[in-house]
Image 1 (cartoon, one colour):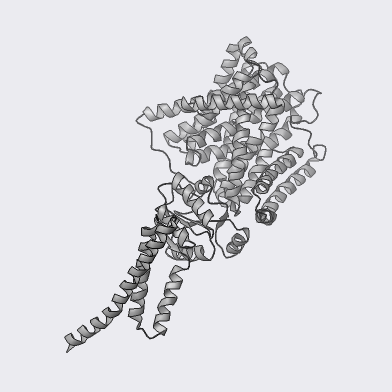
Image 2: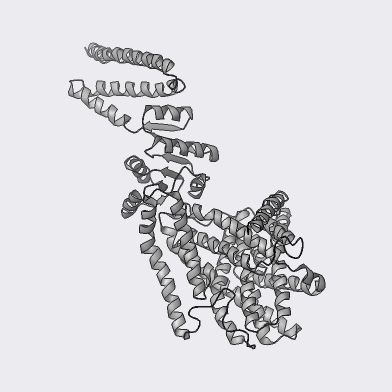
Length: 609
């Protein structure tokens, strides 16, 4: 087990950076790594079936994270493209491939139908990962591709239910390649009711139960437990959906959508993202390792024809739909090339079809080889199209994101200090993305309609997720010096364009901020103390203008001293001398000003006379 893990990690670490440097992308790097270490080349690892089932968690996690990005309202906006575009793609592709197989081969209609349904699906993992790497996932093209993939994931459920009706053999009673369904022996209406109950349970659990659980775990202050809870949600949904014979990826996506409005969404994304990346990489390696080189060598013409035919037929349908839905030329090209391959769910459907006796072993192996090779060449085709489009005079500028930004101002820490700043900015029409690390504070703020996200803003990934690359301003209003400085360091390192305005806890903290040359800072009690001092002078008999002027002089002089003394404050001897000189100078300034109002008054009276 450890030896295999070592081999997988070495293959990924070597192949992926090389592929990225050559401009091939990480997906193709993983596929090449798998091909090299697989049983048909260097034979460093054996059968991939068990590893594949484990690696499919990567696909599940990816759908969960995508769901977190799509609030129910945004998902509702995609309903036409999901049902219209996605539904049309699956139906038309399956009909066209099935018709070609029946006309050009001697396969039965049952075998042709089963193969056609499997080949109608595209690779969710490869398409979304490739589009994300190229910055296209959040564009209109990316959203259209995602809509088709989402419908395909939904379509897996009725396809799995349909396959037993096509069965002509006796081998098969009821395995989907992932285990026996707990409800497979029940009547159809009971299966439907239980399925709906499970989905409703996921929705209600995410809406009403998840937040208190997350809050309880977050209050413990143990980061590892929060990460464990994040993984528990994904794994539990996967186990539940698989046990019921449903698509685990679809269940995870539904859970993600339900939690999209949750204040812990950003932290969830950050916790799961590394696991998703590793498992997806493992998934791509297993796909590469599963490419049957001897079979390709025995039947090169047949398999090559199958790959070209599959890509051509799917591209024909996709291009036609792009024209019907009035995509631009560039959008249509990306949409067509990105989705014109077989998908990982084809392995599941083909496995079940073989178990049920719908297709024979030889045909099963041929189709699996065609699907795997089509997945392998898909990133190459997308890269080739992008190169062609960039050289064409018809190429258009990159598309803008369609997922709306939270705002161009980020506030880290939304307690008594941050709220005052936020209320002022909101009153002037600015939109804010608010981050806070206190579950109790978040719960209170959300009751009053504030949109606040849980997370540690000292993590570059969280700031990135909050839109730091596009934001104009980061206001740091946390109440701990160390945490504040951590955020400053991370922001200045990873997002140097951001202007930082910081709440200073005390004078030493202000010195540290001055050393970091932040755009602005304000000590949390300084202004209140100055204002109270002005009121004290007024109570002692000073007129209001004189008291306010004294307060202004004190404020300006003290702020200037923060910058002047920032480099000296850590050296006690130098600092004590400098601060003593500062107080003496301030005293002279204030004493000189005490005479100024009287002289001004006298001059005014004399001029009046």
